Each structure stands twice: as structure tokens, then as C-alpha cells.
Length: 283
Image 1 (spheres, rainbow, N blue to C red):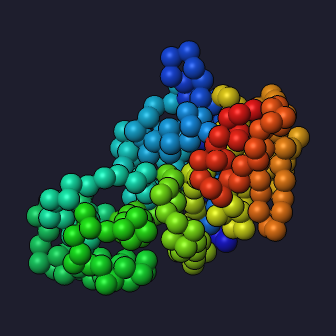
Image 2: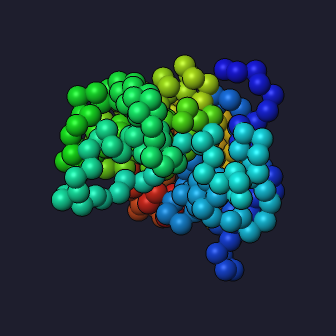
């Protein structure tokens, strides 16, 4: 991990509200180069909004956010220091866009009318990115025909095109099976370790990243907790955060979070995607 003292991402006293509803407030966060932070919380807790604030699509209600030492917004908006993997989106099956075309948008989408030399260099860069995410065989495939796991690989290649210092991933494991999820997580982890890229990873499935996350940012009820996984994912911590009894169990290297307020409630395994959200929200 780089010893660069400058935080890749820094939020100070950050608050985000929609009308009278505060998603989170007074958030202070500094990310080191190469650090992996998992962002957890139920629907409506402000996970995706946090990422949008970092890329300048969502204005903070209060506080500030800086990426690579520069304030977000204005000239810094759309900074190539940030790679962004959005939530899975549907594409028109009739669209003629190829995988190569989509990744190229990440490489030179900011340019108009590239010259021959630039076009050749861009093609080499696209080929290198597809190879890096294991998607070379998909280069000329229609994007609309990709499976969920294939699409996420291509989205990651697009996000890495600018060799970002910070990679933002918004539910990249949604709708993927266990095998696909494992491959996506491994891909991102290997990249950040080899390139020193910081990763802010929004997920409902903490178990998919539990072994590699340096810290966890847990958002709930307008509040948050930030720290090592073993400290945040603890009964006392989550009970305090939710203001209701929460039990955290560890078994066979996995974490199970249970809302303990209802004696008849079933235990939910967060690896099952939305079950984790339902368990925490039940508190």
C-alpha cells in the first residue's frame, strides 16, 4: 500500500438530506491509497447517494468532499481520478453497441474526433483493459447480450480506463450468483492491490468482501459507524446504531445479522443479498 500521505478521498462534516429527512450527517472519512472500504446499510440509507456526492452528481447539504486533493464540483466534476461502476442497468436489446465500444467510451469518451494515432493507441488500451478483466473474448459481442457477470466485468473495464486513484462500486454484485460474485470481488481486489487504487464498495453482501475489506462504513437511520469490520459488525455497535437490539453471529467465517426485537423473527444470512437489508431494517 502506498505511503502517500494525501488522502485519495476526504469527506469533512459531510451531511446529506432530502428535505427534512437526513440520510447521514457529520461524516468524516479519509481513504488511504489502496484501501478497501465496504459501505453497508438498508434501502434509503444513502449508500448510492454517497457515491453520487463523490462524483459531483449529488450536492452535499453541508460539509465538503475532496478527491485526489481537489474539491468535487466545478472543474473537478468528472475527474479521471475516479472510476465509477454504477448499479446494473438495462440496455435496449436492439442496441448495436459492442463491448469494445462501451469500454472505449471510458478511454476517450471525453474527446471529439480522435486522430489516427490516437485511435490506434485507444484500441490498444481497450484491448489491454479487456484482457485485464478477463473479457478479451467478449470484445466484439453486443453489450445487450451479455450475462450479468460479463456485463459487470465490462463495466469495471470501462471504470478503470482512466487508471483512477479511486474506484466507486455501486452494488456490483446485484443479481449475480455466488461464483460470479466471487470472480468480480477477486478481480477488483487484485487490481487495487497491484495498482494502489482505493475502492469504495457498496454492497448488501458483506460476506463477499469480508476477507478483504479494511474498514466498513455502516449507514442507518441518519447515522453511521466507520471502522474495522470486527468492530462495526458487532452486536453492541449495531444495537447502538439502530437503537434496537441487533444480534451478530459469526459461523464458518461468515457474518449473520439478526434483528432481535421480534422473538419470532427468522435469522437472515446477509450473503443472500436483500436478506441482510431486511434483517437490519427489522430492528
